[in-house]
Length: 196
Image (cartoon, rainbow, N blue to C red; front, side, top):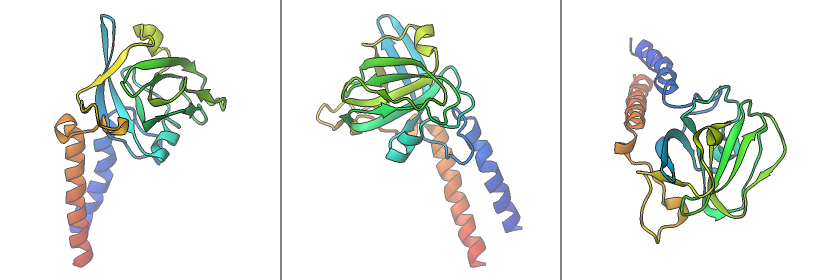
């Protein structure tokens, strides 16, 4: 009976993760989510994005995604500001790439990057990261260089390195807490199955 329940939980996990943001491509794990606001002039736009922080997550980006919700996307955090080069290899949907500095100010935008293109898209110098949104979002919402990315997850310590200015807290993302607790329960159940 325990083995049957364990199998049911394994089948339920992808269902729990499916509605959190843009659906990962087959074989990809869901990344942490954050709600961010892009604020410029008198306009403010809220997005719910996945957060990529490791080199592998940044390199994979949104590859393989067949759709991207209008308020979804991915935040790729480079840590220390550096020159970044992006491409659209294996990415079937057009993307707007918003390059931002360590102060979270958008410095350049590459609109509607062409799907599957292997052409390199360079940052305009050292940047702290890239916000990838569905192609045409910047034009539709009037987002321009100089706009600021704001998040409740950002540390305000000016002495913190750029990579430490963005941190997910459990209270900011209750869906991830529930998933983590589910995985803990599954781990406990799995240990019992192995020991019985």
